Image (tube, rainbow, N blue to C red):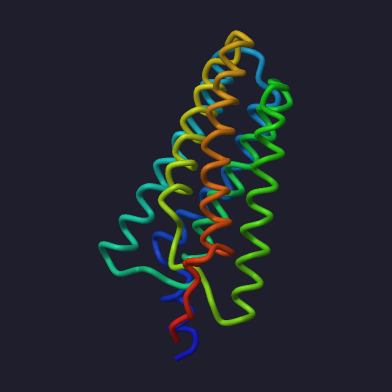
Length: 192
């Protein structure tokens, strides 16, 4: 009986898609960091586009076919954040203007992780991602994908993209601070 439940919890299409996204990260990193020609950057961009598409699809499948699992609730954001981190880190090697975005991303995600763990110990959690976080994720993926596909952007364009990313990260960060620590916190008791 345990094996049957285990398979139902782990071996779902959405979970397998999240694992696939995690497996794409080292492939992207190697291709992007070694890219010199436009077709190599396009290949790296194609891998990112595939990752983004599987991210969209896994959530729809999970909701539509009632395949939402506790593992999936963990795997999906881990795949998202790992992909964003790898992408931002790689691009910041070739575009130094992106380094402040990388630092802010790490600080924001560290805060969210610590706040989540503290609240889990208390039997509490946020009920899903905030809309500001979802918008920030979309802006980051789109802007960073542009930077991958067009590696010869002018420095001013890169600085504008970095400023936009910073703005959305700050808005998302502030929203999560208020959600966890604000007067009207959004943290709720975890339902059994």
